[in-house]
Image: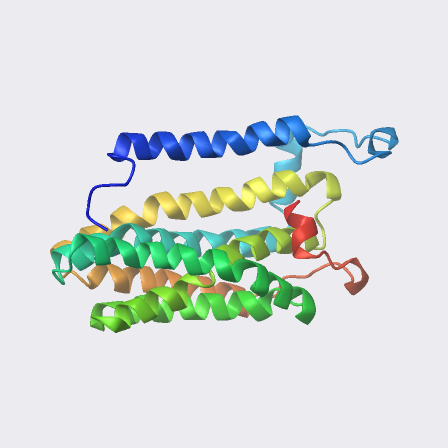
Length: 254
């Protein structure tokens, strides 16, 4: 549990992670097979990307989901990037416990993603899980500057439990939006996640600028972004396809 990574250094660690990711790609290439009969089905004729994007930008739900993800991703990216530095430099935690909070954040996210996705399927409602996720996220961020000790761990676990499940439900919600043609689903997903990437790139440095005023100030900024994402999804309705066309989370993610 010292500061030195088990692999001997950060370069071996990154090499190990890269090799692990590549191994999954190799297994997919070797063992993945098309579903029997799929190759005989008629192919959907592709459309120019410009035409698809132009049509999708006229779908209101794409903007609602995209802007929700923009502010949500910015808030979470700011939190995860800043927390270890904040705990070490401002609260004077040791390196191992400071970094451990982030490990706990991602660990509980991994544990909770399947149960929360299953709960969403059972409730037949994405917002029933996504709105509490957004609410817990912005409340956590606003409370963080007031926390120390065990409360820091509680806040990180509370926020982390929804991270991956929110992303999976976002993907599924895009698949269920009324007005998006099936052949445009991939483009719609790319468009929505482009919004998210904009937030992930822009929000952390903007929040970090506030650290010169006060160590806890960035959390208030990112908490405000989280509140905006909650309000967007809570106030503006997202029209889904008919209830009979409900898409399970696992099917949409595939």
